Amino acid sequence: MRKKTNYKLWAALFLGAMAMNVQAQEEVRDLGKVVVTGNKFETPIEKSGKVIYKITSDQFKAGQTVADILNTLPGINVDGAFGTPGTNLDYSLRGGRNRHTLILVDGLPISDPSSISNDYDLRLLNASNVASIEVLKGGASALYGTGAAAGVINIILKQPKNETPQITLSQMVGSFQTSNTSADLQGRSGKLGYAVSGSLGLSEGLSAAQDTDPNSVFGLDGFRRYTGGTRLNYEFSDDFTMGANVAYENVKSDYDGGAFFDQDNQFSIRQIRYGINPRLKYQGGELQLKLNYNRIRREFFSAFPSTAKGKSVQADLTNQFVIGDRIKAIGGVQIQSFKFESGGEEPNASNVDPYFNLAADVTVAFTVSAGLRLNNNSEYGSNLVYNLNPSYLFDLGNENKLKLFGSFSSAFVAPSLFQLFAAGFGNADLEAEETESMEFGLSLYLSDKLTLNAQYFDRTETNAIDFVSQFDNMGNFIGGGYDNVDGDRKIDGIEIDLTWQPAEALTITGHLANYNFGDPTQFYRIPDTKFGLGAQYSFKQGTTLGLTHNHFGDRVAAIFSDPFLVNLESYDLVNFNFSHEIFDGDLVLSGAINNLFDEDFVGVYGFTSRPVNFNLGITVKF
Image (cartoon, rainbow, N blue to C red; front, side, top):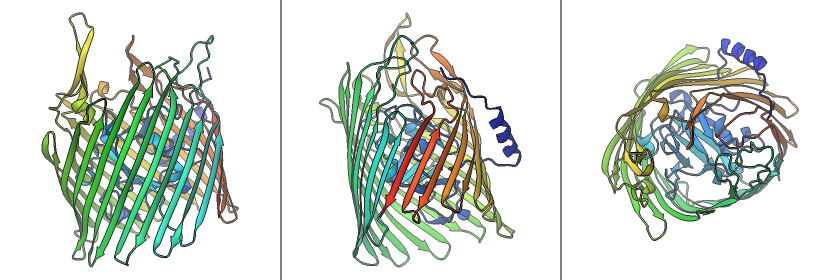
């Protein structure tokens, strides 16, 4: 066992920074000039009634996965991110589970009908294909539909942008025989923009299950990921463009039998998705269709082999227009169709949702965003959700501004096909989960030197869908199934982050999130506290050094054997990273040392957490 790190020095540094109100984190950035995810309009950050975080590809560190990147953001916890690359990922925003957080790819929902929660598997996505990630917290079903109950993660992939062809090659190697090789070509030929990419990720050097027996040696669990994709954009005229995309993702991984249990199992996930995106501009508005088809196949090779297939169609037709000088409006219809193939059964379900959203500058300082959506589900009927989001901007002079904002929203999570129709467990009478959220806060902008965001939220879940177990008179498990459970699930908390640039070359950042769970037994494995502190220094010679500290609070895990509940201690991770640009950025050398002080911690009970490890990378553009 590794010794637990003494963090007295780091605690003193952090508390000192807190006294100076430095409560942000190195990876966190406000979107700067314009935000989109908050209301689907291009909106100046100062006019947005939400705190939205964005990290771009030039902020990604060597060897980071999408899960690693998300774990650096305020109040977001991704369970499983510190294990083997094949470990299941459970991500939580404001106490929500996977099904409460909607994953978007280029603004369009993506999901997996073959999974229990109908959630997208982030292990499929290679970070080298990502241009940026935007995170919006709070209920957003009025804009994005089912699943957007606790927040939205919008993953924006790299697009054709160069007028001349450019090839980018990247190679990363690291601990545990880990490597990632990627290549992409993008450019433009006349009216045609194109981007082609491919990658190969490998890892061989860790056991998924934790080995506590000194007399045994657990087998190493390998991981392989292959990705490829093409994106095209053709400008028929100044007003009409057509986009098209196709992507293939394949993950193969070994996995063990459970907590502390070595076993020689494997799983395979193959996914293909393709779509089109026509856009027509007209005077005062824009008509757009986003259409995507997704097919996924999961296979498990173990003592209990299984195969599941899922298919989904996502279509979002929108008409965005301007009313006068102060009102932007968007009306749309979202159509979602899901099919789940397992054995001889092929159940399906669909949503057909008309929605409307507007953003109005009532005065120069006062802005209101509001929206409605009528969800029509093929199984349980319909429900209406809403969002109201006012904000007020005070001009403090000398380029200093203060924004006050609030929001009130409702959201829903439609039951998955597995929950509805799985043999022996499904319940065709399930209704949608419902959520009501309230938040208010402030954003302080002191020129371009300091940005402070502070907010309080309160979220209540009702009609929650859970697996309800049944027991005989002797307490023996005899079965169970999915049902809408009675009662409310409540969570409230505060989130604070700050970015401070005391000098042109130095950025100090940090974050703090503290949550109060109404019933802790309903929020197992989610820490109630998370905070961090970071610093980044850029030298004129093109070298950047960064150091971050993240604290993850105590958690309680439920297990299937005595004592049934296990307290998991808090842990602290310190990471160091560097990058150096040569030839005006055409050659970039980068590296990272993660878990710098070799903290011995438990991320997922019974499974391995990575000790100190490193990554080295090189990126070449020509």
